[in-house]
Length: 140
Image 1 (cartoon, helix red, strand yellow):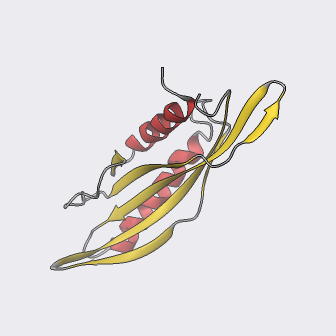
Image 2 (cartoon, one colour):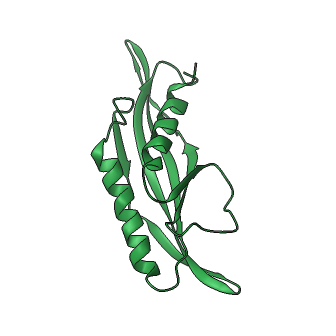
């Protein structure tokens, strides 16, 4: 049986699968970026939980990361902005991932341009997604 953490990360990955961009989980950056863009979900860190004792519960603010990349000649900024907006709309549609999570909160993207020798530059960003959830134990 998967842990609460894995169940929530799998649900987040599944939610992002509905977007036009290719969505991977914990993969290396491929040599070719799909025309619609690429999202790589990194599991991130659960951090130190707050603990309640009666009943015993561990309340996490898990920080997963989305690496978002587009490579388009002209209109790269527009394509990037469209993908970021689509991610936001997808997460806004269900902030609890079907009741698995207490709350899902994306942070603003930190974007950069990455030059590539002999090709159009990549526009990339890391979006931290804070997953608020509760478990019955640190390994549950």
